[in-house]
Amino acid sequence: MAQPRVAVDALGGDHGPAVAVEGALLAAREHGVAVSLVGPEGVLRGELARLHAPGAVEVLDAPDAVAMGEKVSLSTLKRRSSIQVGLERVRDGHADAFFSAGNTAACWTIAKLVLGTLEEVDRPALAAVVPNRGGHTVLLDVGANARCKARHLEEFAIMGSAYARGVLHVDQPRVGLMSVGEEETKGNELVRDVHEVLKASSLNFVGNVEGHDLFTGRVDVVVMDGFTGNVVLKACETLAEFMMDLIREEVGRDLRRRLGALLLGPAFRAARRRSDPGAVGGAPLLGVKGCCVIGHGRSKAHAVMHGIRTAAEFHTSGVNASIEEELARLGARKEASGA
Image 1 (spheres, one colour):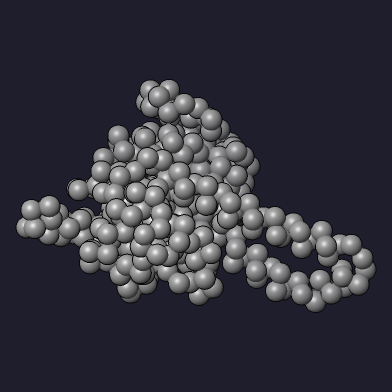
Image 2 (cartoon, one colour; image 1 turned 90 degrees about the vertical axis):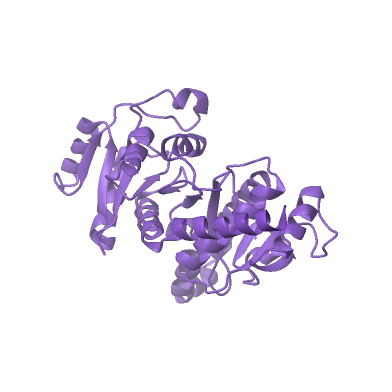
């Protein structure tokens, strides 16, 4: 298989090009990814020289940046932004995937405009992968679509199931629908409508799930609207950080605890690695043509590296072909039934 090629938005994120360049070099060295850094050429070559790697990766000039808090309507007018140029590389076949830790709304909007959507996909969804007791759970949508119809959540379920099979290697992904109770009658009108649709689908649908099911390993995919998903994801990230801070604070209260922490150090570090969002690196944008992964704005170099790795794995997995095949089968079944 050919070496995956990933275009990287070197201006995205809170920490500037230095972190993106360092993460790109790590991805090229540790994971064998062919990286193209996209941003102001002079700045990027200066960062590469600082790291003593002047010719290690390709540099593509993109003089404009999309600020993290910038309105999407303004960002889409920047035809030479690092997001625009990077996604055009994917569209034109010069890159297999795109990674950015930049403005999520801008990435979603520009990806949809530049790449277009897969056949039968109405709303691309942002998916996040979180750890559970036995592996990982795919959550979607986690912020791209605040308002959804039943059709959209049905698409999310199909796309999430395809991602769990292709990238996480789960043979028969168990799909759950986020609600306020496990009973079919629980939830708002949207949830009840989606429940009926998914129950009649060919997916391995296990029914409604609640917030405590995210980490138990009961399901492999959890489907929800983007408003709920974004709240859930940010609460999970903050809770993980809070618990680690709380442990550090309590450990440091006296000498006996500090001595005990020395013995438990390997266990603490292993737990932190398992719960670290940076180990995944980013959320795939499912439903667009091509592969796009969006990282957290606070991503440091190792998270950028893993985001690039995730983008490469997304490309090699064949997930997009699986999504198109399943949605085509769904459309054919609905047409045959007169739905």
